[in-house]
Every structure is written in C-alpha cells, then in structure tokens.
Length: 150
Image 1 (spheres, one colour):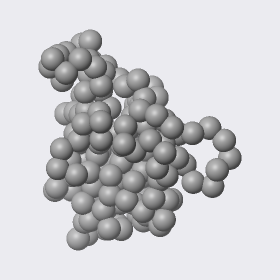
Image 2 (spheres, rainbow, N blue to C red):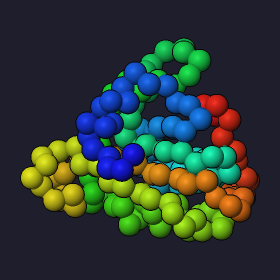
Image 3 (cartoon, one colour):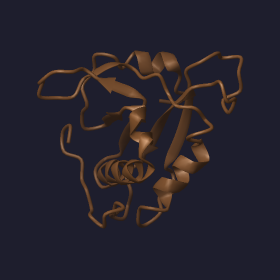
Image 4 (cartoon, rainbow, N blue to C red):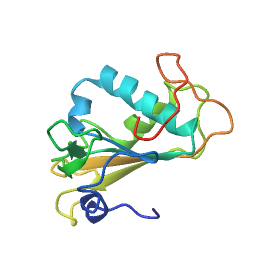
C-alpha cells in the first residue's frame, strides 16, 4: 500500500493473518525486550519469504478459530513511549544483516490536526518488510520463514 491511514487499518477488521499479513496488539510494547524479540522474528520470517506487512496496533478476535482474525484497531501507544526512530532502530539493531528497504510507518489514531509526535496523539505502526536477497536472522539467532499464517 502506498499510504497507510487509520481507515486502511479499519478495513483490515475481519481479515485473518496470512502469508503477507501479521498483526500484534500495541500491548506488545509493555515489555520492550519482548517487543524486540517478537518483531525481529516476524521481520525475519517475512524477509526470508516473499515479504509482507506486520501491523502493531490490531487486536485479535477472542476464541478458538484456527487463524488469528482482526477484531479491531487498538487504542494505540503514545509517541512518548514508542517512536518510529526507536522502533526502526530496535529492529535493525537486532536482525542480521540489516535490511535496506524496511519501512516503519506511524499511523495516527487521534486528532488528525495534531502532529504525529504530539504527546496526546496515539499511534500504531505498520512495518513493511521487503523480501531480502540474503537470509535474515532474528534477535534469537534463528532464521525464520513465513508459511501461510505462521
């Protein structure tokens, strides 16, 4: 997608994870070490497959369905807690090799008149992962690959 907006995220409601889409709740940022571990696994898996999009800011439907399904857009996280620069750095510093073309895009959920880095703004993030020519290793030293929705 050329430009991600809150409306684009809302269009994902009802969609399952798949070969090119993975999503996480912004609660992932409550433990920054866990966030780095989880995100680098997802980035490695997409990079070592055909690329994809990892969205941090979508909640899954509760229940026992076989595939995770988007229930709603999360409430977001304050830019004072998680910035685009920090998120990009935590991913690039914990994968090997670093990935050119990886894009971390903040999506504002609050008042569109507020700047994206305003303390009252709430953000979600879209991480666009291109297919990489070299195998990409996650923080834990393992090379992951995406298969269907896993």
